[in-house]
Length: 169
Image (cartoon, rainbow, N blue to C red; front, side, top):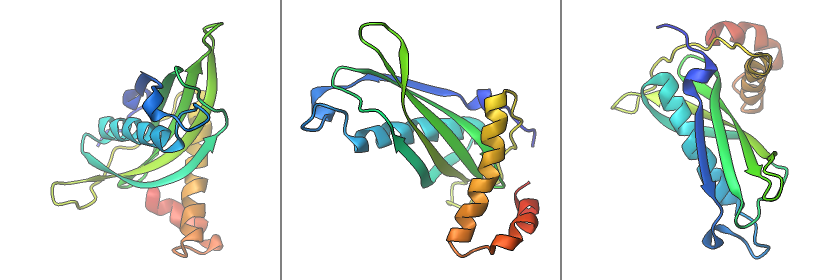
């Protein structure tokens, strides 16, 4: 199975915030943004694995900036690292400033997806070869996030991290 580059999975979803998607402050509901991010991440994971994919976890979400009614929202998703059957997808959320036209980073998130076969059994996925400096930073961070997740779940002791690395690469 040949490794791929993060750009091969790049998924960009752009939409406008409608009144039915806002809270009483006229900002996009957090759950609506989570759904948009889940769709983009799922497409990125599918592009990378060429398999059916399922959301395994939402590892991190940062709601740094409110997204007002009428905003143009762009969700960008790419696979940041692939393990045996799972993929970490890093998402950046941008809004267009109405007056200047500048793109402002509003949010970011990290999702994990698992590739499965028709019987819903996990299947192997291609590796990732990061190219840009940001992709390399996210790639390296993904292993630490995976190890921390396993430690917190009680599936790994902190000193097992070195042994665990061999399982994922």
